[in-house]
Length: 70
Image 1 (cartoon, rainbow, N blue to C red):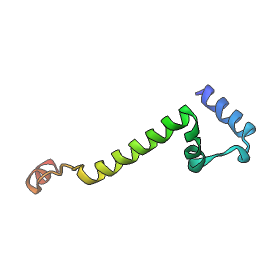
Image 2 (cartoon, helix red, strand yellow; image 1 turned 135 degrees about the vertical axis):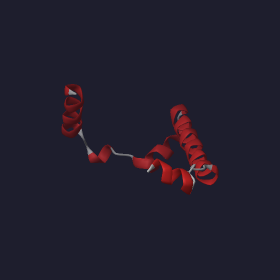
Image 3 (tube, rainbow, N blue to C red; image 1 turned 60 degrees about the vertical axis):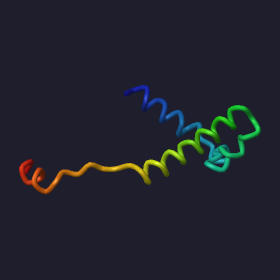
């Protein structure tokens, strides 16, 4: 727990808003090998999210089982 607070304190003191890249900055990394992996990962995660939202199902109990469970 102490390490977490130390990290957050250091991050707050060392932060520089001009260094922040955001999502657009992550996509601009595609010229480097790690940038291409980052872009591919973000794209795969987006496709997974759309597929999960489209095909994912939530199992709900029938009214009979819900009444028994309380």
